Image (cartoon, rainbow, N blue to C red; front, side, top):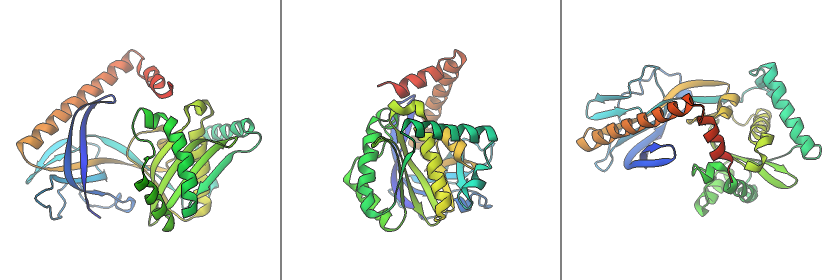
Length: 310
């Protein structure tokens, strides 16, 4: 389903925005069922475009490894900022079968993390599942407390939304049995949260956060492990879609992946072409900065400092 939305295309170096432009676009996300279809997603959609819209955005669409970054197609500029791996997890199996994707060493490591945290908590892991309308308020209260402390919110501004509209959204999803929230506790204190929403037989990955004071206990990893175990047992959803964006946890817990991209189809105009070219230049500068930091061994140290500093 296409929907109108305002999409910000940012030129950034690190977390600093250099230039930002808002586009009014018709947007759609490619469904998991379409990922193996023969559709050429790099062609402009055949959907009526109103005069006030700047074009289309097709999210998480499968592309070839040699996909062009910039091309012209009819009246549109086709822009693919970057290509990423879209990870999914097959939930149509037992948890025992799911664990077979991991090497024996990885399984041992994950189970050891769970046992170690259980000992730290007094013998058991306090893992809680939230799915009904009455449960949304308790989940939101605890999850917001964790999100407020997390680096995802403090540094990346991608924490759990703090708004009445979002709380209403959770209630609406729960009423349709399309809300899943998961929390991990240490002695009644929430230390990690995960929020997913469903449509049809697919669960979409949205927000994860953890208390940085518990980073050494791998609470985010443990929460993922327990959540997937619960979902395999539940059998309500068949696919967990981790969507775009990097993350070791997505690669770790996904069972398969596709090379995908967000594809912008912008009306061909001097302003749009100029902005896209400036975006390409800024992104190239950012990538060069990352390579320089990698070459001198500072990138990982800088990332750890930023993530875990108070």
